[in-house]
Length: 288
Image (cartoon, rainbow, N blue to C red; front, side, top):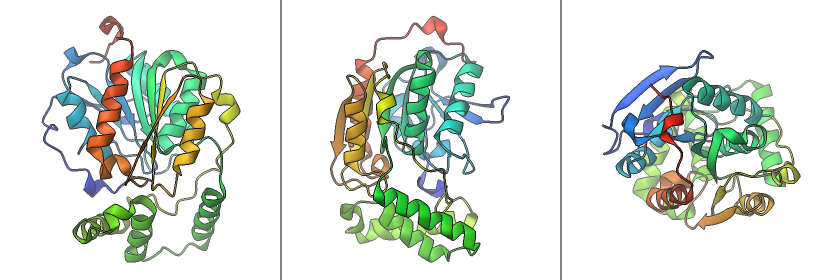
């Protein structure tokens, strides 16, 4: 689940050079930063699929650090991690981008985990936030509830949907801040009113993939958010244990949208991870 579009903003670094385009399959993408910065960091959003989710905090931090960034929209109709992995593969192949560093959140992380199994040569390293490698009781209960809501065909009132998203996605620390809570409620309600919310749209069941992750040979850093109820931190820790050589970081006072709640801490982990990756020959980067 992702934050609503209205939360994205444009941030202090969003004025960096931008190039937009669309793949033959119809995926809209944006490159941020100068071409001379080399292969971009590919940021993969969760359910809802808008690349603008990264533009308020992550894109400015990365471009300020001299990195180029690739964001893209995969849309709210993406059926699951396997379909999204195929879209990422098409995007990287279309732009001629072997060996890019990637970072994904929630569904985006699940898709990257599949890409690491099928196309490891496309990825230099992966940061996986709010991820999992197997189903759990809470997640399965939520999936059943969303499927039942979809079958009923009666949309929830925007005010109620906004409240549900609020408590699902944010930490108690954020909820204790009344001004911040009011702002988030407005944003979630706007998303519900305009149809951009990914809430209550049933997805495919989560498979147990932990055994397969033992075949991943790409550098991986898993980030868990301590107050995440949608992708509990212990499930992310399991992914880190399953992937040979993977590292794990857990951010306190952060819910499912921890990269927006605690952007400075998240960006520090992301930039530190990128610094550990071997440099990629800029000659292989053929981005226009």
